[in-house]
Length: 318
Length: 187
Image 1 (spheres, rainbow over the protein chains, first blue to last red):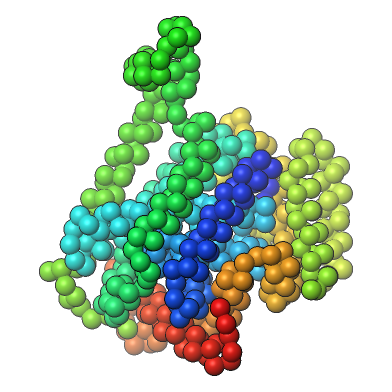
Image 2 (cartoon, rainbow over the protein chains, first blue to last red; image 1 turned 120 degrees about the vertical axis):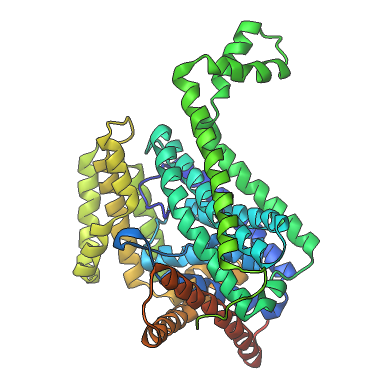
């Protein structure tokens, strides 16, 4: 999902750079305050770990192979603000030393993979983990969080490409989201298996690593999450929402005095009658919701498959 | 601060910005920018084969844009897009081939990048190859000791290699901290 240079126009590059600089600065401040000095080298080592882990290949169907992206995994292992710093570090090094992802697009890449993917992954992991207890819950939550983080980051990326006028939204969204719904399955499975392997060898790492007071972590997650959602809304809203047209039409018909509540209720109905514009949007939303439900079901089924009896059953393979 | 490195970073950003902002109709400008980048590549003696191989790969995005153009969409012309990203990529490759991480970090420090991020960047670069070697060693040891079973087994073993890599990285982080303190490091 590394956007190369030349794909984003100046306004998108500027907007994403501002957003990701703000997010990274906040995450750095939070990490400095919440992390004990002992843990500071862990950031650099985790970034190196992520880079090395991305080189381990997994066989996928038809002779192809995939690898871990790891935003959700690192967020689950280290907590939200540390994960933002780690992912940004990896992306900066990939950009400047390996020419992977553009320099002007660095802001967009840090925004998509560093902010959106980590925060979506962390949020989904924490919520889904509460639904099922024990190791099995952790594995299921990690698999689902890995999938969600890949898909949400790809939607944000599609929004930026459309905002730049490079690829029209009607092509960018289905292409990016569709491909990443498949890639996300691999990402979720790998992340869950890695989490399982860590929980079998060093379960204490899962308990202790997200250090700092939990209220502080929740606050930094909320602030960073708001920033990421604001950005996604900025990039995606002009295209994704079929309602503004309907809203305008209804407001025009009802006259200038129409209150906000009226049009917002009638607008969807209005849109159902317009076949050209609204039905693809509704169909996309329905497909997205269905895909999410299926992914969650798969994640739960997968956790039952690999974790028998809820406790550690097999020793690690190494 | 290393002035040459700062100039290189600034020059790269200016060139990339120029290529990005050039309107698609002005092909002469692209030719001029291309000629400039080619001259720099030749003067800097960037290994050509490596450069060409990297350019040939370009990215899945260019392939995706070409595919979108094949469907007859009203997006931008994908050939201009490919040209733009190839020129930018060549520029960034020249920077990455001629600048060390130490020089880059000096430039970042001068640009007031927070110290914590600089420390993290430096540590990441220091242990990047150590951990990559470790991952390769673990994978090789696993291949030497086990028969290759089905895909399921390959996934389980690769995942445990990655998991073990994380455990080792976090244990190493503790040792690194002790070593840093022993050498008088202060946060």
